[in-house]
Length: 256
Image (cartoon, rainbow, N blue to C red; front, side, top):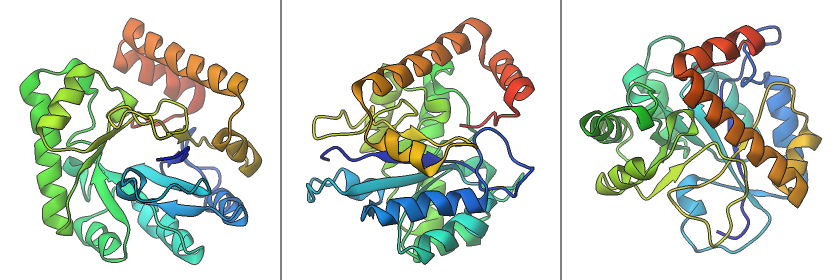
């Protein structure tokens, strides 16, 4: 990796629906068009840590949660612009509650997209016992590998919460990398088990995303402070109370 930004999307919803972390199809296309105009090559998460390409004009595109809207809207737009992406799927919710089903996930894998794990049940793994953590890592991986016939070696931590226990458990389970929701760009010195991403929110413009992909030191510090504040609120309020607060103020996903 050499200063490669990773962009994090969630659902792709029609106007007047969705929430803080979703984007409309038109807004997603605006972002993809801007990335294409910059001449950026898109990488899967596997390619981003391969060490075989030191170009700086590249970007990793990811989608968390496995929403069916990723299949219906995101994948066709990505293909229109000749881009690849990685879809982190909640393996225990496949086909339920607006999530992609098994044939759709298998189809994305056949079309060259990367399918990786976002856990089994989407729980905060910093708050579970060792057995639950192990099951979340191993069972989700087994399910997705059975569907796609391809290795699952990357894990997107639910809610972006990564601690030392999760790092050790992920390594023991055979994962090569952990992806957080911490803001930043991953360079050659990045810790593979603390990889950073750029979270796209509902009203973020293509210009704002471009600025985050090449952040100034001041912008980097401000966004990292926002993430630390969020983590403190989660610890003080608890995950459920924090989620309720976000739903009240922003209509935001519980998933992340």
